[in-house]
Amino acid sequence: MQHVFIAIEGAIGVGKTTLARLIQDEFEAELLLEVFEENPFLKDFYQDRERYAFQTQIFFLLSRYRQQHEVVEETLKHSSLISDYTFAKDSLFAHLNLKGDELLMYESVHAALAEKIPLPDLVVYLRAETDVLIERIAFRDRVYERDMDRDYIDALNRAYEEFFLTYDHSPVLAIDTNSINIVRNKEDLAYVVGRIHAALAGVRQPRLPEVE
Image (cartoon, rainbow, N blue to C red; front, side, top):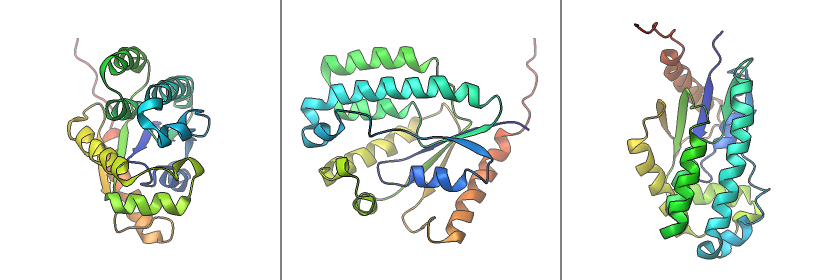
């Protein structure tokens, strides 16, 4: 059996981790979940983004690199893998939060690290309107997210849309989640699972041998 690497993406509050947990058994996969709480700058960042953006971003970059570099390749040797983030998305946040010399320094570090990270076989991009994201963020009530404002979430949501307009490193399956509830409605979850299976059908086809 060919093991696959599925990454779930989307703006804050869209339901990435929830979907990853719900489909783990269906795809007989291990989970790779992003750890936010360990970032010591995150709470301060949401209160004063300009002051704490660089520290927050570099911490996330190195943390995400360490996690994916150590886990992805080894896991795929014996199991499929589902992650609730892509390494590439770190750059999306950096371009939203950094500027000038800080952004240039970040880009040089990110480019060097990204070369060592395996790409997903499929990216599942969950989409939702900004007001829906705000409702979901409020519902889960994470302490460090209580100070986020709507303008930031809206800017992030638009940045994701622009990011995936040109993203071509892996196949992307976009799913509109505005009117579905994969936790309470089994039919909604089955719909999403069916879409993922269909998208993976091409990924699982054996690759043609290269012509010398």
